Image 1 (tube, protein in one colour):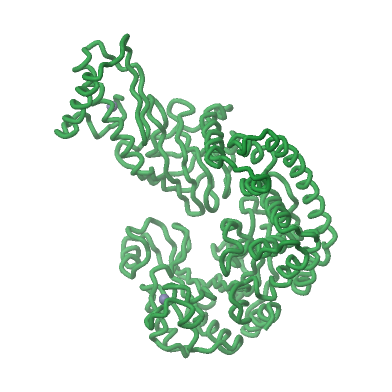
Image 2 (cartoon, helix red, strand yellow):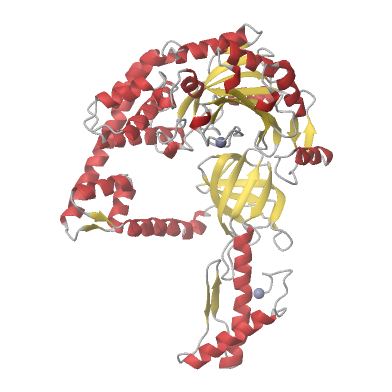
Length: 630
Ligand SMILES: [Zn+2]
Ligand SMILES: [Zn+2]
């Protein structure tokens, strides 16, 4: 069965069972600047699930174009990672049907529609989901011992719709895995997940006291109100087309399916020294690039355009590695030919697609050329080594990835000071971190926060403001470097020689990794960090959690400075006053004025006094309010 046939059979299966088949939404969400790309079939239908709009029909099905770049480094290295993929799904956003219908519908398609033998299928359900277990074992032909309970079968974002899910797995045979007779899905490489049926049957309104991996944790969540059963539980399913493709086409990975192989072949035929990994990466990226541009994305230095630029440049670099003689735009033309039947927009915009790729690869070639000139200068200096500073400049100014510099250096029998490269990189990060207080250019409208960190390290709170590049915004999305202001916060802002806290801020829709905390104004606390998943909005409820281990380390060092001060006074005299100190998680500094060097015996005595106090574990400091009098 070809990829096109699988897609058609899936959609026809649901069309003939009263589902309205929707065309794929564009990769770029319409009227939603907060989301970079659609990354799941349900995403364009989210408003229907949230009751914000009436779906065009109670039962829906689609093949949705998706793009995810979070695992871009894995592409080509595993059997299944891709940036662009199609997700097949059926949906009952308003609860037109639930598990009793969704499970038999799915089973019918895999066994009859796709002709998969029953004995090679397995199913997992959530440990709390007796209902799904019952339906699987009574309404389908799967043997009960092929349905296992798995605590990871839970879907949710921490707030909002959540619920158990149920996965269908393909058995690749005992020899494909650990070989043990009692092997089960997710145990080893033997089973491959092909379809996930999600049952959003709760509205999550609070934190669960333990991870939702057991029946008990769900019962407790319902009992204490963290999980509120929905009046109309919904259905949302997702099946990766490329993944079901490699199973049905009896291949060992997605790149061997007819959805990608013609592109791998195209690259292979046109390269001087083909390597499998680069071929796969170029095949994946060319497909993603083609679909992105068809949906109106053009290369730029931010947001979606930057994602596209990175894909094109990455593909171009791999092309360079393997001596690719064909143009990337040639791969795009092949992509158009492969997918135009189902996605006619590709054919309509073919010329725009190829021209955009040509222009960007030429621009990149010029940058590379400038970088090459720079590299020549560096290499001709001799010494056998490309310094870390030079490697970093090539990276920072000319966009040379380290592996390119390494490879060019190897051609000249030079080595690269990679340690120095990493140091230079870290120094630049540190510089920009230290420079952050200057970014509080407009100080008006910076909200005040209440500090809750004396009593707790995790606080339920609300997002008051978000700043992006110094400007206030309503929403920040994945990858954005932000300053977040909260109503109450346990994060300690850098002051009095003590470093700021790190940790996370989580909302229903996203999470910020807080890398530093600063005090731009008296009473204001700025959390500096990066949105690592989803999106974060002003006005949302949030959970602010300080990195506890690091904070405890800092507090220990803080206490140690008090001990040290005391020991110094006892040894060197009462005139020793603390001039300054800095307390961090890894080390502490303590400055004292002294017009002579400390004698070795004195150092020994100071050290002994401190250690004695530590051993006595004297109550040397009021622990309730660790920072107040510091
Ligand atoms: Zn196993
Ligand atoms: Zn203190």
